Length: 434
Image 1 (cartoon, rainbow, N blue to C red):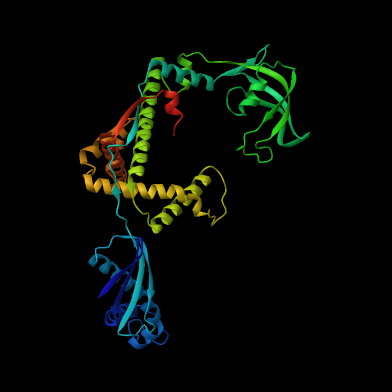
Image 2 (spheres, rainbow, N blue to C red; image 1 turned 30 degrees about the vertical axis):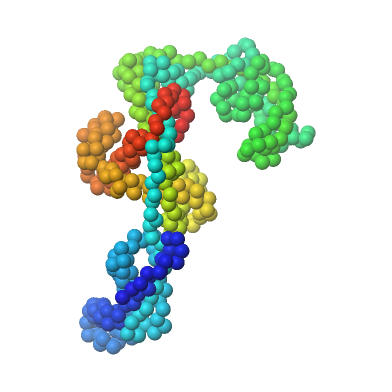
């Protein structure tokens, strides 16, 4: 028999018991299995008396069986009481004598919350769209040319996009601050490598010219010593060089991977690549907008167990990302999980909201939708049929695709129910988003 108490909110406590007979029966079976191969001094394998086995292995086997019995008993009681358990229970054995006829225990845990989805008809959502133009292709082509520019000396004042070699010295209250001084430093104006006010001060300077100016650092500048403070910079320009862009010809096309040097093929490849990336970003923007609507209209309590688990996952992902970027992390490095609670809360909420919407409105992924998405992914590869086989060969990969289809179905549901504001974006606006 078992009973369930409501402690607070989502927290519950299950009280139940396990018959000693059940534990002893499983212990005996395990000790006999151990006896077949156990090596005990003075006895041949398989000939060790049960009492000796019990003396040597009984305590550890009892703990093992008891732990498994607690888990099994809890699972059965949770099913009988129709409990949707969130996270893992905390067990407490109430019986002091583990050889008592009944082992009383309690399990404290959380249940999944009820998710109340509000009225979506009064909500507004921006649905972004993008149309690729020839100008977008040419602009991208120009960017690729700039990335391969050759800088040559210019006998004139520096202007935007020039490369300038300078010496500079920055002083705070008359003293050079840390990182505020450099010699033969090269900067491409307009690249954003330096602060805008610093780069703008170089514009108009000629080789051999020196100038001083005051500049205030942003309040959120990473250098805390100068953040939000006014400093005085002195700059000397040594060399001004202007960019010379490569011609769009067969040599340029080959440099960008077009083996036959066909410029038109290169442009088509650029168009295809932009189209795929733009479609991905449009889809991402609309998904984010839809998720924000759902967070506004849904009411639910977040289980602490799920929140803490998700925060832990985000922390581990961050550490892996840091290592992937070349940062050497000492073994066992941990970050405070409360750093990730805001993101974790959002992710857990959305997971619960999406699950409720999918259940309530039958938004499950249909086989033809999954097949179509796999085909779509495959089209960007040289041998699409191999990519399709790769997905189909692993159920976990197909589940990932199914999850993406589910998200698309939810977004479609939001767009169908909310007030939609169609908004056309430019390539620059689109590529400026993640």
